[in-house]
Length: 371
Ligand code: SAH
Image (cartoon, rainbow, N blue to C red; front, side, top):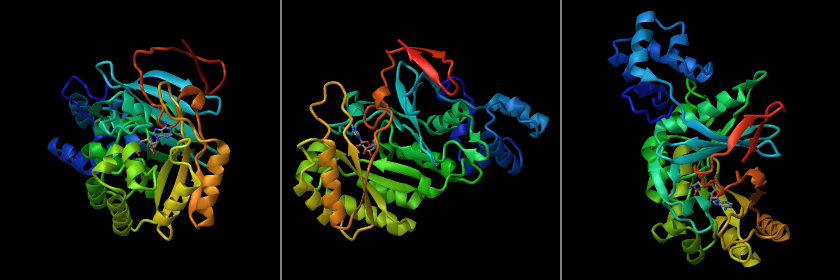
């Protein structure tokens, strides 16, 4: 069933604690019912209201009438050779969006979408090619994490499978502020997914006024898509820069850290061959961020059909990193994951027309996909 349901029932996955309290109060029940519900939803992973056995019978019966637990429908599942898993999810009306799970030794990261498509039009991003369709609802955003947990089995031994959440799928999260903020609250709440604030990362292309607003609303990690060391180049790659330039953007970032008592902002920098990857760019970038609470994450460009850009050669990426490190910056190179299933950054185009048949594979923990 789609999260945006045709009927009038409230999707419980869209309600942070305060709203769930109100919802329960409107039903004439005590606040502890909201806590019980959150326990079923986020600790026990129960999606079937009649199975929530410690809820009073009358309350449960009424809840079935008024509420539901609905998650986006899975259209396709793919597993890459490195274990990265990508799900294509239906947004109704032929629309689709994607989420990606990236397993690593010490953590499991779920990369989620905030919109179907994107309006920001960054020149190197495949999501931009499809334009903007619509905002996802809070329930659809929380529903991604709930669904991925269900698919992956929530826990392995006493360890959770999804330890980190990043808003680095489709869409610009700060352009869907009203749905994204309550979703983050549910991720962080100890009664919700109870993920630490340093493990929930919002990545933005640089919507400056919304960064100030975010600082007042929630406390999570911030990543910013910088991609260029000067306004001239950044305005070509990330058009929102024409409205909010680098100086304004950096001011907003430092303000965010001050307000949130945060340690650093991660700046993402896509490595485009011959465009922004020259030593002079590294030197300019170092000047911009030296002695600032900043980390740099270099992302090798992931190509997609029709793009005029190429990935910088590995040697150029490493040289770029070294130039920055010599100037005292903290730099990492992002490992490209899941590229054999187009699950890497900027490749999430979400073609719903490609209805690949999915069947269970013989290998454990594996789905095989055939066209
Ligand atoms: N709208 C948000 C989230 C986008 S996706 C933002 O702009 O930050 C997360 C990261 O992937 C962003 O830094 C984005 O610029 C980058 N990205 C987009 N397309 C890419 C591509 N083709 N190759 C590598 N990184 C890409």
